[in-house]
Image 1 (cartoon, rainbow, N blue to C red):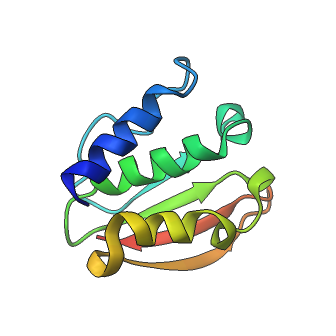
Image 2: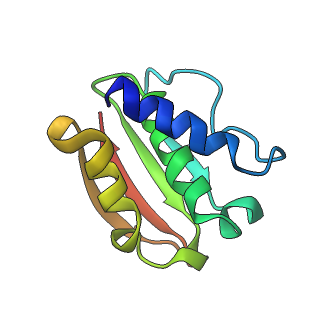
Length: 111
């Protein structure tokens, strides 16, 4: 991600509800799952995208993060894949894993 992209993401994050907790507060040196299924995520698709990018930024290289997105926004190919491509291009790989029983979706991102 370029510095400009990081600044754009940070600026976009500032526009969200201040009550939305960050998806993580540390860098994960292991594989982990980012929960993007809260009510604040259901209400704000751009929060899902911003926190997905934040989750990737907080994942150490050689690991993966499962982005568990809110079902209210539909399949992540309609809004998340393009955002990941814009932010990272070929620097990361992702794959759709499955739809959860609750209606959400899981996208695995290898960092």
